[in-house]
View 1: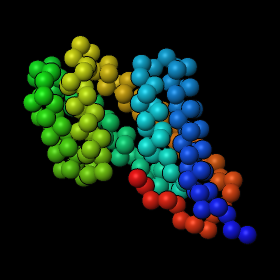
View 2 (view 1 turned 180 degrees about the horizontal axis):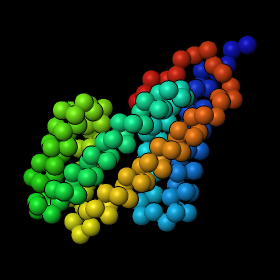
View 3 (view 1 turned 180 degrees about the vertical axis):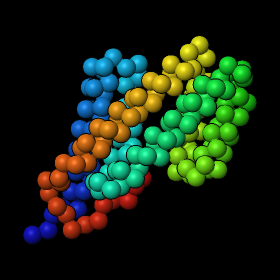
View 4 (view 1 turned 120 degrees about the vertical axis):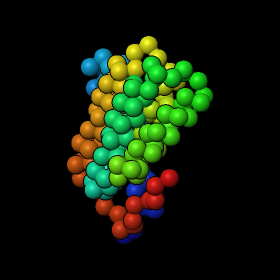
Amino acid sequence: MSLPKHTPAIQLSIRAALASGLAVGLAQLLRLQYPLYALVAAVLVTDLAVEKTRRQSLPRLAGTILGASLGAVVNPLLPQDAWAVGVGVFLAMGISHFAGFQEAAKVAGYVCGIVILDHGDHPWSYALHRTLETGLGIGAALLLSLVPLLIRSDRPNPPPS
């Protein structure tokens, strides 16, 4: 008997839904400022394969820490405008690559840009909360990745989109 071809997609959707719900619920319970980032992190690192979830977790967290920290440092030094965001994204991505964290570069770039553009009054507070919320989302995804799949499929996991 063959399983439906959509079984991996359904299982991935269920796993991501549970991880994101858990992450948002915990973030709200802890009264964190931006539960949205817990949700985003949980969905983006969730995979059917435990090792792939783990592999995606470290670059996501490293990029968030680097981008948030660099953005908080640069924020008071530059105006909150387009060229400052560009400088921050360039620096964050460049540092990521030179430090050997190529997979974290895009995350570091966009987080740094967000801190520079939108969090001028309290960049360090935002950086800390962003890191905590992202870590919470990653933790929820890692926790759910330990739950065995209920239905095994002979088909390989769908390619990431």
